[in-house]
Image 1 (tube, one colour):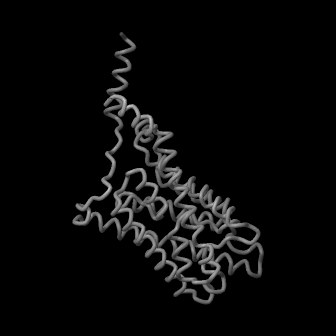
Image 2 (image 1 turned 135 degrees about the vertical axis):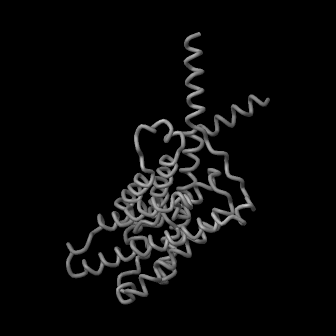
Image 3 (image 1 turned 60 degrees about the vertical axis):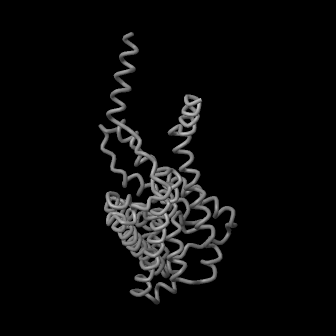
Length: 281
């Protein structure tokens, strides 16, 4: 009897302390008449613009400084810090407005998990790609000679690696990122670890940093289709376009796997659905 009371008390505590938000509707026309929706799209555009501006400038600056000095510039470590640090800053700034996606792969994963509607997901991706193009455009406008000379920060498969290796690197790298996004924003984790102040943008930024350390030598690290697309559009060289599909297919596959793993394996979505079916039967 005492055990039953304890279980009941735990269940009551859990019910008060934590609940999953309802799934987002597939199509929500009401979003189109809300200013908060358009404000979020603008936030995604500006955040992606700033992200590409800072990070591509860092890449070009490193290449220009190391041209005559192998030890010059910030190095791969500095480039990784630039990408991870900017994601930390921008997710922190925009999380309360748009959710701080700044990446079509993240948006796609959250859409598959029913965290955002189809309309929001599509417009977020469009805003992110446009922001990336504008960010790279600013870099080229300010440093045109360096931009063209040092590759424009475009993602390309490195010499010595085949396309399968590049695709695998993008899939795994994006899985790490999107899995971290799900874990850092999980309401269940926030409830259970409420005594530990975890700032969600911090692990997300560190995930980007670590993935860049691992995959810069392979693909230059995409894990963000908007980042790769924006650089390819402004740089506009054949090699960047030939490898472009890797930086879309890989991240989308990685995001889909991360969404499935978190929602249906870790959060037991499949078991819950099966249990609901059995109870109805």
